Image (tube, rainbow, N blue to C red; front, side, top):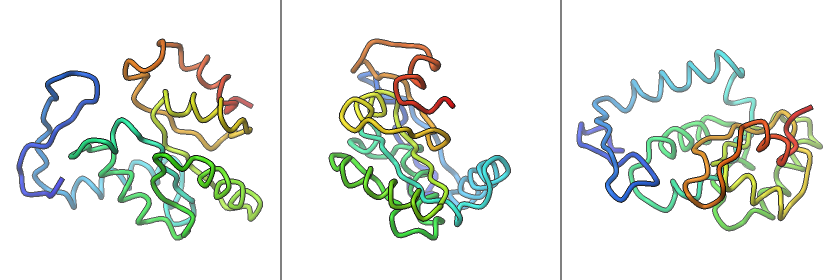
Length: 153
């Protein structure tokens, strides 16, 4: 999204995506940051990891736009997007946890499920899931997903 007021694609499952008009990118950033920080605390204190394959693989995602801003606000160099390098991501998450740096893994549900299968780890308190299964896995409840990815205490 470039903030120019043009339409940008939004949606990851339909052949035809919907469009979201972004008139003011700075306003969007401010609102997203404020909403996040009101709930979770300052972004610069958190290492942000984004596992968003269905979104990263196409242009114009508002979720990627928001995640990119959050990653830029993070004061931690371990933060970033991870598409096909989940081993590196898990190493960075472990390093942050050992250093007692709060971690947020923002991920699309099917990718988190795959991550749990390939890199089993207790990610309690670190997960923010979004986006459902996008037709890539059978639909399950949020509780089932949290059990699979071990983010329920």
